[in-house]
Length: 290
Ligand code: HEC
Ligand code: HEC
Image 1 (cartoon, helix red, strand yellow):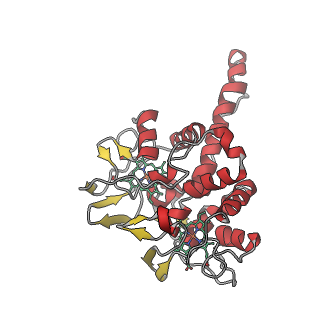
Image 2 (cartoon, protein in one colour):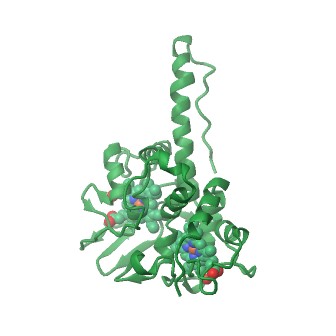
Image 3 (tube, rainbow, N blue to C red):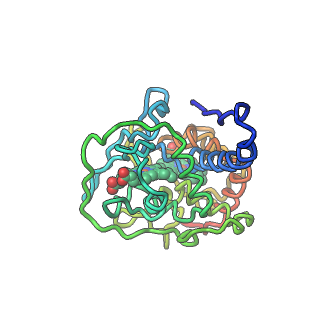
């Protein structure tokens, strides 16, 4: 990973020193917060960064995802979201980027629901801007989309109860609220809730599992992560749960399959202890379901 070092303040004329000490420091904090959110929780690379044999190809970060997602009403890929002005989002305003990230609206209309803006909806104003600051700090990569996106549908947002609007910063001091925030940004329940009509049924099947993935590991079904003591994770210890989330290891020690294992390794392993604690506490509040 090529971590960019902050600009050196050593060679700056004295008149600029005050700005150098205050301005860029605050900005660097935003970028670091954005990096944390993106790398530990929102996993934007998953769909917007090409992959090499060893995982994400960070030398062409944000230049567009490798997978094509298709459904009855769309055929799309994660587009170039690097700061390139011509083929990426370098010429987009912050307002346009906010609309894409939390409202699922691109420059030419509603984005296909593969772009998980429903899960990003609760982002606090500060965290949303931090993600944008982090994206803008990347290297611009010139890479046009291979083929145009096709969409022919209207998608109603499927927002998770309690996480359907912007959170305010102060509310995150409450552990359960923070856990719900983390769960939404990390899209846990969008995979772990059973679907109706191709979208998670948060009302009656929250956490009950059932979404099915077909990949190199075969047919993989998202598990029941409600607090049911037999069907769900109600009997698991906090440490069992944390290990599953951050290391992709099941309670019996078996390795979990993709996409859970890949998300654990590339992203959830980077979760802060506070966020992980809050997430586990909130997961325990999901009512048991068979
Ligand atoms: C599960 C896959 C997935 C994840 C994760 C994801 N995106 Fe997307 N994103 C897409 C797809 C697919 C599109 C294009 C949808 C379309 O064209 O209808 C898109 C579109 C966008 C657009 C509009 C770009 C354009 O040229 O129209 C932006 C901006 C964007 N995503 C930013 C992000 C950010 C920032 C994150 C993380 C916070 C993120 N995405 C996470 C799949 C994803
Ligand atoms: C892209 C979809 C996806 C996302 C996002 C996702 N999971 Fe998973 N998860 C799965 C699948 C699929 C499995 C089953 C893996 C297997 O069978 O080996 C799984 C397995 C698990 C397990 C193991 C349960 C058991 O009974 O073995 C736990 C716990 C878990 N996930 C929690 C979470 C949490 C918490 C989050 C959010 C931080 C999350 N998952 C995000 C798809 C996902």
